[in-house]
Image (tube, rainbow over all chains, first blue to last red):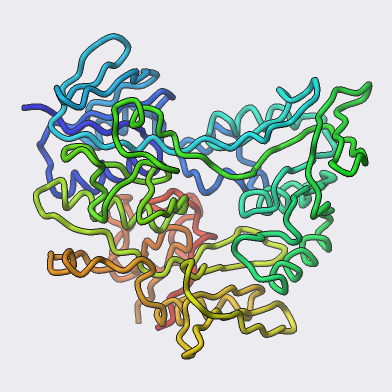
Length: 395
Length: 55
């Protein structure tokens, strides 16, 4: 019997494997990865410094134990060079592997800004446990860090590092932090709290060059001003790792295009997690990934199940300003209704009819309402009517 | 009365009534008695990323 093959052993690949095994204990299952295949908690990478955790301490289960637990074969350190969509095979380090169904859970790579200068190779990104190990090592003996990007990951790292005495400056071309998720008042509130925690911001600016200087690194901004830093960490977004799918002729736009069953343009190939584009969206967040893994496990065991995307509140791990954001779907006509609280800020995104479509909560008082508000929001990406008759898992 | 705690990162629920027998935590184990070394079985974050579900 040909196995189900999953490419990728990140949170997407392993969560799918776990959910699949709950339904199909015995179908042959193979997972492939180009790294060491260890299970670790990716959401912890951007604030593990405060817990004093090394990369090894973040490792929760090595690949051989995962293989035992999942009753699966896990091939680590391998390179998948080609998918043959006619023969339903993969080429892995020169060897041909046949699959019954294939799932692409290859994740995403950090976006690299097009920078000039002779120290561009010194710009780090942290997108997996091994990156985190390099980052921890590079921080030894350093004092100042410049973060490129004031998004979710950038703000989390900024708070984590500033809390440890590093001089942190965040540079972003947006006018306020979390520019894509928050209205200006919310962004300003978050910025103020992070500044009180010692983080400096250079907003409305971008970096043009990174060069070596005698003491450390010299960053030149677009207005020709200069910042000195011992280290530069880039967190400016992710780009789906869709090269294999593109080469195999699957439909790919920003990510691998799938329908609501996570089926690609090939009937036996599926995709989930950061690599996927659904209804025009890429959703590099944990909650949608979990919903995808549960639904896809059902689909792969013979119960076709479209993915429900309930409202997904995103926790921003910035202890200086505990924040939860439930972004409104794009294209919803509405406005932010803001309220400043003694210990924070609260915004509700409501349509003209008053219906709640999103929210942002900051501070201890506001975030208590996260569940209450999330329940009032309809499915974020509604299941298409012709799919909704199929049996669906509870949200 | 047993309480439930929600993983604010991935949505996993720890129900005190059910415990987490697969990880050696008996049914009926109170949240405060769950060891700090315990991690979310779905996404791996620590207890500090869980919040009480008030329904």
